[in-house]
Image (tube, rainbow, N blue to C red; front, side, top):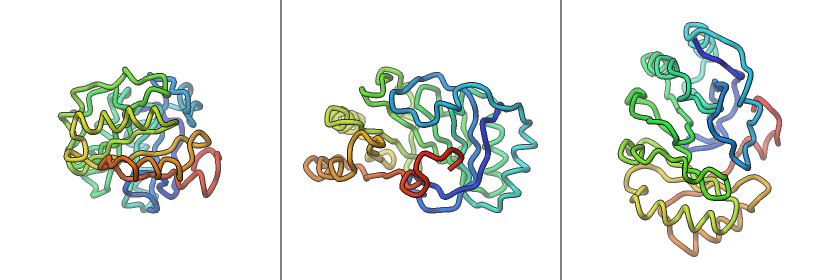
Length: 211
């Protein structure tokens, strides 16, 4: 059984899959309270749905790409079963996680998008460090950058753990906190081995829910 906040089909706005049509499964509950969170509505509530039900919904969307997100999806044990079924169906499955929980139980084909929290999030000490060793070339690490101090912290973290050689690293500007042009300038000034990631859904739909 899963507690589901919402399911919807949209354009993938983030990650290396940005721009593709995607079926989204947003699960409820989160163990963090990040300062810039734009899905606080997923922290509580939600509706109980069986893995069979959610699996059937995804299959009906006719999307190759699926993202399971939250909230924090790894707080729910049946997330692993759902991800496995979707992988077995031939979907490309993205799991977006806040990095506080062990990612190793997830099926090997999954693309784990691990959010490493920078200091301005208020949760910079929350990262489960063993996850660094679990990263593979097709996984992604995301840093949401709210200011120059966050950028410098993310650059040092990336270098210390040689993340650019383990997976794709993405630096993303926090919406309405730092401009894409400023973050791009910092990245050009200091080579990080990361790529710039923008939230396409924000530019298309603003803060509309279910997008």
